[in-house]
Image 1 (cartoon, rainbow, N blue to C red):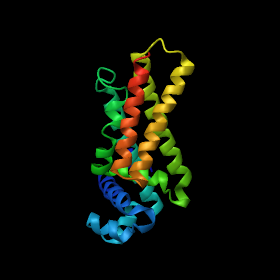
Image 2 (spheres, rainbow, N blue to C red; image 1 turned 60 degrees about the vertical axis):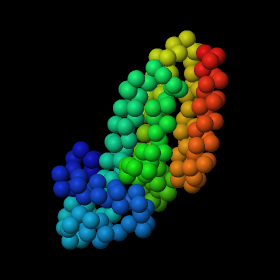
Image 3 (cartoon, rainbow, N blue to C red; image 1 turned 120 degrees about the horizontal axis):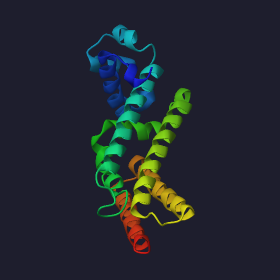
Image 4 (cartoon, rainbow, N blue to C red; image 1 turned 90 degrees about the vertical axis):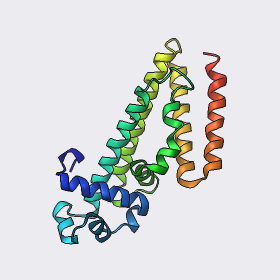
Length: 196
């Protein structure tokens, strides 16, 4: 069931489940706990979602939609006018991860996908990364239209490698490692941008 096909009640349940899955992960989350969060009896929850997998898929769709919208907004907000390209996204990534259930859910799902949903999770996450890559490439081309395509490809992939590195620090690392990687990228980008 796609997130836009959800009834208002099912959407509310899926949003509560998204928050619960973001905190507990798939394996530790329980349908009973989600029913309690939603103020429902477990049987009523099953009237909306026939299984934990179905509810997880709905939460995944909500998280993917929220994060795609966030990427769209970040890259539409005057990217390339000041600072490093893509800075609007990567600079606030840690704060968003801390404060936003959809990003925490999405990264936790991608790094620890439920076995039964691995293909769906990784397909959605890879689509999200492709969307992010595309937005960055758009602002890069606008800012540096004369950079040859092969070099542009290399730089876009380097940006995505930094994003991946920051994701790893958010999941497995700490603030010190996160900020060290962030500053290294800023410095590297600053050196390179001066040559474009």
